[in-house]
Length: 256
Image 1: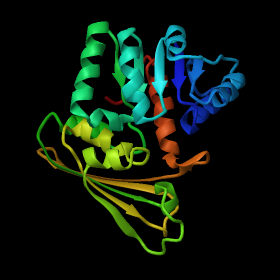
Image 2: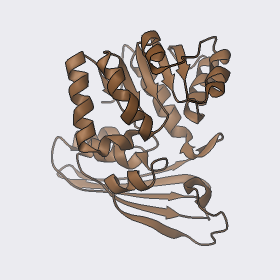
Image 3: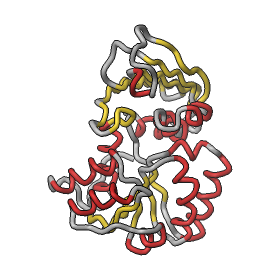
Image 4: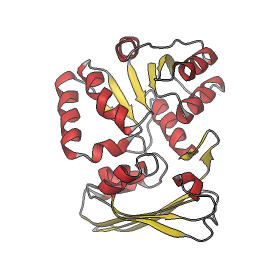
């Protein structure tokens, strides 16, 4: 499968490294980024090419993986889907805009394309999807990150709650930090209650999920190592993208 990459930051870099380590069962079609130097740097490593425009990226790809930004999702995903090209969206916060989500769903259906959302930097999403077959009564997420991961002053000495509210608000206020709340909300069908805490006493990004429903109760805690290239991105997010890419070509598939 020929995969185009839109956004050549930490996630794309991790995927390229997996390919070089023979852990990724895809071929890179081309790389596209507004910073052409970043695209060229990755393309050279895997003997691929740089797309000079979104049209070129679409033309070369059987599937496009977006790992750029919520803005890139809004401006580029409709055009990609109109071409009938499948997409993987990492910046899932854009999909908590119900009108936009409906728009791209309809475009995908009309053009025979698929939209894939990786599980990202949290655990338990398969269980959440299964629980949705019954009734989910409450969903909450508490995220703790070092201040630097939230773009805050590193001199903060004690933990500080910087957000309490719904996921749909959190993704607008912290578009690069809390995509996990979007994934959780979309999987559960509920706009999750979110608390974000800046905690100078931790090193890893930590996500604690609580869900109650007719199935019972789910509690998970995920403590993630940050990407060495970007403290705002968890390595597990890149790992989940790689896992999904491999899953698409596997004969035996585990999980929903």
